[in-house]
Each structure stands twice: as structure tokens, then as C-alpha cells.
Length: 321
Image (tube, rainbow, N blue to C red; front, side, top):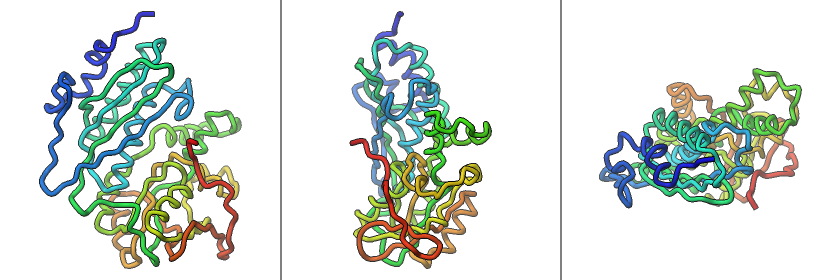
């Protein structure tokens, strides 16, 4: 098998992803330039994906590229930021076919056009295992960024979209749901492989939300992070957590959906007086936003049923270690 060398890969596969950004210098310089308008902060986030951990061997390379870009954009959405550009580090096994790398780049190109970002640099190395790391750059007006640490007792807890679909998609890829309807399977796999970064929602929430985080490790785990940073406690009403019609058909008590990750929806808090403003944002953007609980003094996260009775939480969410 003949493989392109490092510089051939850069020139033939990755350089086209920099087209349209003159300050990327066709990836020919040691670094790129990123202008930031006066009164703005540069927002920087990094997410990595590894074969066998974040995707399986039979996951199409184009889907891996699309997902890597989108999960990084989701971090910008959680801060109310606008994307600018990204860098990419790829660690490629020597026996990985060129066709896989080309498909990966095709996925990046498809979605970077949609979200108006370009590759501006990075690194390409040989390694024993396939690892892909992206650093996304964005901008946000100074002192207007959304943070995890702003939730206050009395705030209402909201989430966008539906929760648990990606986790069901992961179960489907593992063969755990052999009787799943084909349409439902396609829906869940799309939610797993092509999450929707809520960039427009994040921008719209800057003026109304007190704290925000994206749901990557699971709703319970990520809410726990938000509560810890804010120094507050939270209560979730299980019956109010939104699920898709396909998920509802599967039944279950819903607790597993609170701990499954990779939904990449926005979980946020806001003062009660912002209720009408949030409804207006949902209507204007065409995104479902659901109130699922409340913030209080104290520590930790509680889940309650329709009668207010506490439900035992056995699993909080995904952790790597």
C-alpha cells in the first residue's frame, strides 16, 4: 500500500480546507493570524476523538470529520460565541488508507462551509492509534460570554431539543437494539453522528441566561459541573425532560437518558422573569426549549418524579477515567 507523505497530505488533502481564509497563508507558514474585533475576547476550545473510544472502526470517515467539527462548535455555542477558525492535529496509523483521510477531510469541508469556518493550521503525525484533535477559535463580546458559574438560587433550569437520542444511537451501533424500526434507527444514528451545535441559540441567550453548558457527558453530569461552578444545587423533574417521539416509543423509566452523553444540546439557567424572553427565542429560532427544573441553595443534583419524590441516581454520566 502506497501512502502519501506528510507534506503531500497537507498539500493535497488539508490545504483545500484553508481556502477562503487569506490569513491561513495556504498552510504554508509556521502559524496563521486571527484578527479579533475591538471589544471582543478570543474564545478557544479543544476536543479530541480517538478510534475505539469515540467512534468504531466501521464509522464512515466523513461522519467522523463532521462530528469532530460539530462537537467543537458546540463548546462555542455554550459560551454564546461566534466561530472564527480551527486548527487540526491528526495522529494517523501508518496502515490507515489515504481514502479514509480523504473522507475525513470531505466531512470537515461539508460542515465548515455550513458553519463558515476554515482550517488555519495544525500538525500531522504518524502514531500507533488514530487520534484526531481540533482546536476551535471563536469570538464573543467582552463581558457578555455565557459561563458555567452564573446560576443563582431561584433560577429556572432549561434544556434545548431532546435528551438521550445519541445514547440510543450508540446502543444501536453496539447491536443492543436489534428490533429497532429502520426509521428510528436512522434518526438515532443521525443524532449520534451529526449533532447540531446550537450556535444561534447560544448567541441569543447571552442577554437572558445566567449560566450555560453543552450536554456532552450526560445531562446529570454536565448539570453537576454547572452547579459546582455556580455553588448551587439543582432539581430536575424527570417527567419534564424532553425526549423524541422515537425515544418515547422505546419506553423505559427515562433515567438512563439523563446519563447518556453526546446530545450536544444546551443546558442553561435563567431568572424567572426571563421566561417570556426565552419563549420568544425558542419561537424565533424554531428550537424547542423546555423548563426541566430549578436552581436552589445547596450542593448536588436531585431528580424527582411528578409528585416531587426523589429518584435514586445510580449513574451520573460518562467519564474517560
